[in-house]
Length: 242
Length: 242
DNA sequence: CGATACGTTGACGGAAATCAACCCCGGTGG
DNA sequence: CCACCGGGGTTGATTTCCGTCAACGTATCG
Image (cartoon, rainbow over all chains, first blue to last red):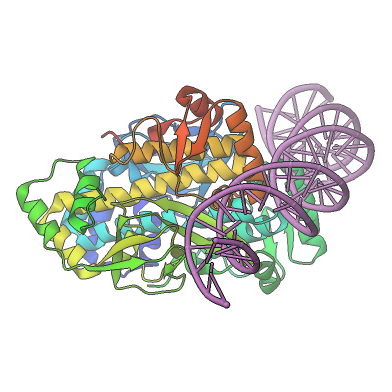
């Protein structure tokens, strides 16, 4: 049974991990004037320099935000899972400062900025949710700066895997045993500031240490405590609990 | 003549770089119930894990936000100049996920969260300003991820210097020729993920290339175009102009 | 069945860390 | 007044982590 592919299910599930929605609020979310679209893996949804008039709710699949340097190197800024609105900040920042790209085939719902502003005006709790969501976004950025700035390759990747597992669990997309492996090793390299080759070697170390295994399209976490210790992972920065 | 050391001057100047304040708004800012405090260089103003009930407006001097790893390494997350409210996000995120530290002797004004929320409720344009300010914060984080993730040491430092110069100019704290050198080479290392020793060597290259000079407590930019090119600096991510 | 994308392996080189001095300068106290 | 001290900047020798290049393996798909 494939997961449901409507926008309100994905968004409601995500918001519900933070606050209990009323029937009115659920109804208003369901009535948002969305434009659904399917995007192919690796396709750009928006580009640096764009001035979007709508934001993009991810319904199914995986997206990332990234910047590309002159010499062609790419740095991934964030990964996104169902329920995220990766370009929510474009509500208040006119021009996009990064690309928004599909990591897998994905279903997205475009929501006009005005509709989001109206929703927030009618339901202040939802406005607060959006506001807070961008603050959590920023908190994760802070942690990524630490990750690429001060951790070695082994810690970086261990930390990233812990983060992804935790975020998947928070919205009910995974259990303790692991999560869908939507990332290529090259993408992990672009997110951690490493080369794909080196990511591969680190994965071999992680497997040899009995921390993780890969297979059947999943990343399996065999030793959560060990992986968290290896990455010095502390979920506080995800601000999951109020 | 020392710069004025009252909170409303610093905050008003910063906000005015984005929007024109009315007399009412200025008056309300002046009447904020602040607690002024002087902090010594290198002193912590708040620590990771704190649950602050007030935010900190920087009136004079320089602050940074940073995280410290188990092994003692430090990663600076952001630098702050007069007019900034570095922990504004604590309005909505209960526990602080980083330290807030003085880089120089500084004067700060603590403002109770409730007073900021009230101010925003009375003056929606100021609420929007705060909201937007945290989004710009996040945008700068994104750029720092790219800086430490994908640029080499020479580019990283050139980029950082361009950013600081631009931000100083934006609030009238500097002109084209440079800005007050509030950063030790060790601090630049902690911000760029480099060792202090290597920062020193890169500075020698930057000087040899005729891009910058240091002296009399200032960093002088001798060749702005050259420095910007060296750091692939594009100010778009600072979102200075609406 | 070839095309393509992703993972894996080895050899080699280079950018930056580390370690350990040393210098310079302003402040402080005997 | 000068000796001492500490913080910041500078230098050189050595090491290490990781990038680059290039090849090869393997699975999925049209």
